[in-house]
Length: 113
Image (tube, rainbow, N blue to C red; front, side, top):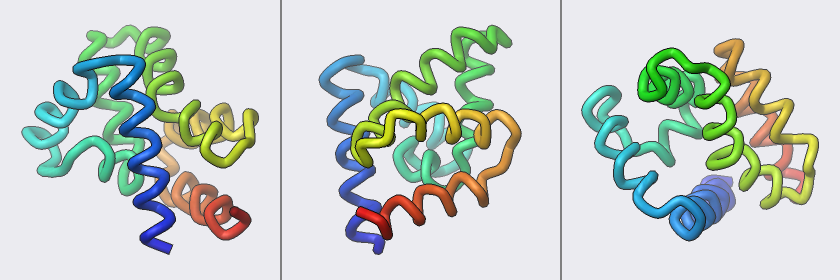
């Protein structure tokens, strides 16, 4: 299953790199400094931590953080699985800090693919 998860990570990374140049490099610096991990790994281990970092970056502006987080990370995941509604479900889990359920939902979609 980790090979499939790596494919999702690479898809998200490629999607962001093409559409929002520099975001991954910038976030990797912040993630490394704050969590000792890059943002791709953090997204799939502790997505709520990555979201919290986005909130801090946008100085508490949750609408901007929500928009960026969903557009940059969650929409590409939903596209990878060809499930448009998945992004909203994942966003709800991230915002409530439910990392375990987020990861279970990703795992379930990996098994279905």
